[in-house]
Image (cartoon, rainbow, N blue to C red; front, side, top):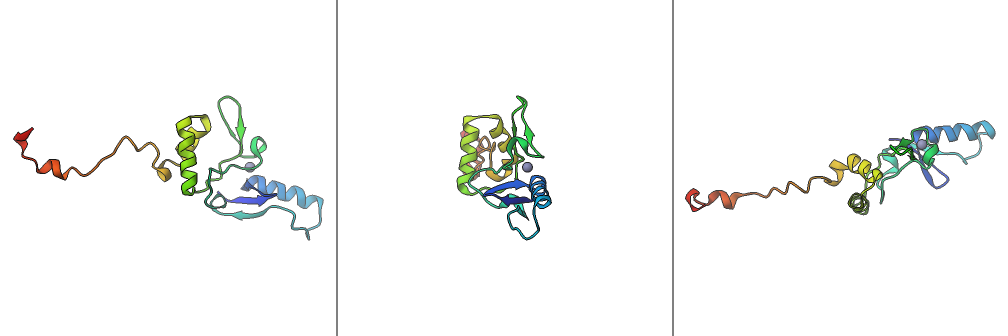
Length: 131
Ligand SMILES: [Zn+2]
């Protein structure tokens, strides 16, 4: 997802544009006090999953079953620290961590622990009647 950087936070593309337009309508064009972007890939690798800084007011807010809203997930990649962070959150268990598990399944090898397939070459060379 493309994101905007503004006021030391990252915002989803729609919120970034909305802030941009809101500020632009109030002041002259010569200010650089408005969201800069869009930047690709959720602003790049981070130590945790990034969500739009608008939070519950995000134009793309994610709403959970209990009515709690959070900012749009920005589809950022994770650093090694970030992968640990997500895995920890999943171990603790929460609605948001389930969502992250879904988003980062391929990325973090989450939910793949059950299948620890090692090459069984040694066992295969054993004579059949030894078992
Ligand atoms: Zn947003």
